Length: 306
Image 1: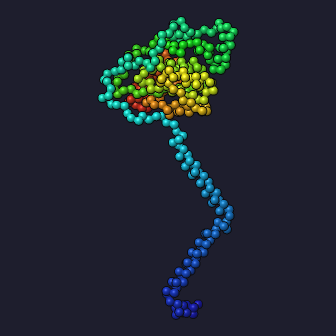
Image 2: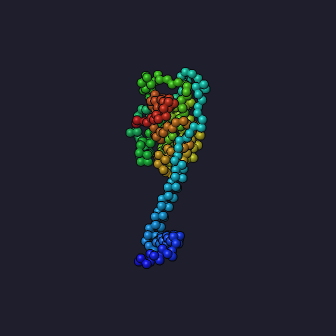
Image 3: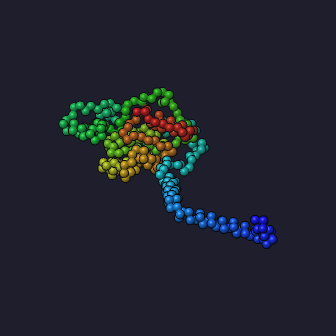
C-alpha cells in the first residue's frame, strides 16, 4: 500500500486527478439520467398510474373551463336601465295628484245585479242538467268553479275601498320621480276568464305613468285558446304582450324568461288567477309604496299575503 502511494506521488499530477474525478461524476450523472428515463418502461404499473392521473386531471380541467364559459349563458338577468332618469330639475315639485295616478284602463260601469258583482257570491246550486255538466267539466279540468268564473265580468270590482285613512291620505313626492314597473304573470293552461280577469285587475288599479308593461309568460300551454286567439285578443290592450316557452320548464324559469325581456325599473310577479280589491290595490299598497322606497333603498322587497 505504501508502495502504491509513493507511485501515485511520483507519476500522477494533481490536474490529472481532477480530470479523473470529473469523468467519474459525469459517468454517474449519465447513469442516473438513463435510469430515470427507463423507469416508466421498467415499471408498467407506475406508468399506467401516471397516465390515468393525467387523463383525470385533463377531464376535470376541461369540465371546469366549460362550466366557466357557460355561466354567462346560463344566467338570465333582469334588465339593466341604460340611462338614469333625469334629476330633480326635470320633474315638477310637489306631490302626485289623483289625476296623475289615474289607472291605465278605467273600469267600465258595472251592473250591481250582475253575477259576482262587487265580490258577491254567485249561486250555482239551481242549475239545469246541461249547466251542471258544464260546471263539472270545468271543475275536473281546473279544480275550481269555472262555470261561475266564465259568467262574472272580467272588469268587476270587489267592493268599496277598505284601506285605513292613513293609507288613503298618503302622498308621494314627484321628485325624484317614482320608478316604473313590469308586471310578469306566468300561466300554464290557465282558464281564459281567470287569466284575463287578472290582467284587467292590474290595468284597472295601476297608475298609467308607472305601469310599463304586463308580460304574460306562457309555460308551454297545450290549450289552443291560449295561443293565437289570446294573442289576437290582447292586441287591444297595448301594454300587454305574451312570450312563450317551447317546452314546460316550471314557474321559476318562466319568471326568469319574463324578467329577461322586461323593460320596467322594477319587476312585479303575480299569479295568473288573482284580483285586487279597490283600495287594497297592489298599486297603492305595494307598487307605489315599493316604488317610493326603492328610490332610496334597492333592497326593498314586497310579497303578497293571501
